[in-house]
Length: 368
Figure 1 (cartoon, rainbow, N blue to C red):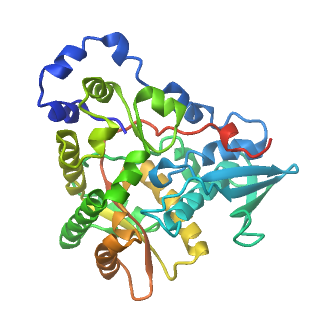
Figure 2 (spheres, rainbow, N blue to C red):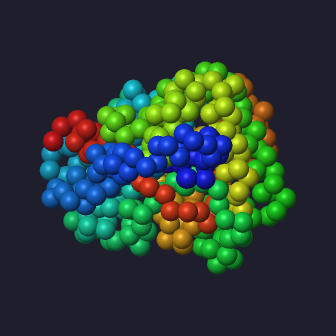
């Protein structure tokens, strides 16, 4: 996540720290973690159709950018997708629901990428039971291209304030084929309050806060070394790191100025939201969670196609005790009796943002 100049100046009050550091252009101009974003340039460059599809799949959205997948190539035409159990969120996602949704995003992007290259990928979920791989995909020639596949490399999760304008009516109609789209002013106000309250709860609960802090990657060197988790990079933010304004210690201290300014920034972002997208399922089975991930990926790509931004704000859907009141409130607002709300996201017109870091394909292959 990079910070805009406006946000950075707010962190230091526009003072001398940034003013003194900005002339160091040689430093500022080399802060992009090139190794960590290289997978975005390498997508589609593999001769093996399975690796080619996987090179796009690993760019799919997933919780906290943990990239919780491992892949095994079997024979000449088969891919096994495994959950990487070292990439869990035990405090905020104790039942791995969000992790499984992320694996669904991966599968859908793999299938779309295969189709775009003229291959089909026939997916079977948990072919050997839940102790085995999450999915088996058998590739074959003859797949059809889906128009959504054209937007895979442009997709982003935009963690910025959205413009103060309503979604165009034709955009709402188009997105409604992929998710429930909420634009009613009263409901939008309710969801702004809910998402803010839930975010505050996560930040004020020490163990859930530290789960995020432990996953933060500060600056180019850390991001390149571990291109997963929550990336905090960019020239202005690294200037603040050098000045001691931003650090892991600061982010873990709710009383610090840096933390409090971050709270203000997040408040501004969450309340600058004209619409929401919601995905529900009739049950909360693993299959439903995979289905939600596949639907969320398609929603992301459709937003990209329409020039819209999408940002998940699913803290209120997390299943731990301190979040239970917000979880119940979310389901009362968004779901019919017996349904599970799987995903909630902000939708609007946002600025362009950089791609998120990714591990290269070779780091995720168990073989081959």
